[in-house]
Image 1 (cartoon, rainbow, N blue to C red):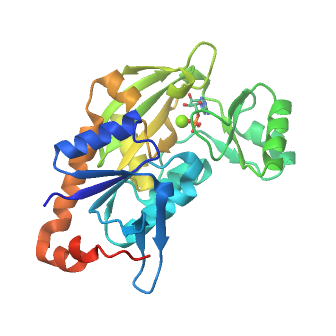
Image 2: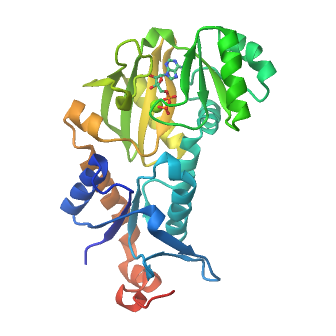
Length: 316
Ligand SMILES: Nc1ncnc2c1ncn2[C@@H]1O[C@H](COP(=O)(O)OP(=O)(O)O)[C@@H](O)[C@H]1O
Ligand SMILES: [Mg+2]
């Protein structure tokens, strides 16, 4: 019987979702695309289960594509699947860590992955000191949470930094003051890591006078070969975050590559287009490999998981 994978995605029509579904089907998976917000978790003395329209969701693997706005709810679903022994690409912990730029930065620094000098400012009065510590203005002020470049600002003076930090703190956001890596000139490198290997890499260039190179802000993309050092750093940062699939963003600084962030739901459109590499297929074959590891003893699997038929009664 073919194994089942649940693709947790709010957008079945999105490029990345479609590509992942297609390639997973090609290598033998039955694919269900389910909106994570349509799922219910019931926790009981046996651990708990995930339900869709009243039916328990049975699957051997889960591919989470959890949007930023639903991180908490999405991660709770992934955690529930994890607890029942389902293969997850990526884990709930990995997703959470990578979504918080401060946590990610702290963990990478501890693992000796090079990162830009970053200060988390708890009181706006500390902004001037933070700006000096990261090398002075211009510097970058960003929120610990955010994506597609929103919440990331290049400021030209400590005064501007103070204002932004003040506003962010007032809104309950956690501001970071970061060294501006000017030599990377609105360009950065995105490495796609799957199963501990770099499977594609591209250079992203910011549009016009923009300093943020995000694809969603109109940045252009092109294929690039990584140096051995960049490759090693991309793999190590992914491992540090505990991710199976990741998009690692690196800036090229005078002192070598610096990791800006590690994305746990990297978009596939830009990178597949720029590199002509089949990234979705790599994810699907990685899932197969992990699944082979799980079915070493298939009789045991049958016992613990039961068949779909025996689970089919409505639970609530
Ligand atoms: N410290 C920095 N120095 C130079 N450029 C930066 C810096 N921080 C961010 N950028 C630019 O802004 C973009 C978005 O920043 P990032 O921290 O990745 O936020 P997001 O999660 O919103 O993508 C980066 O891809 C990069 O081009
Ligand atoms: Mg980014």
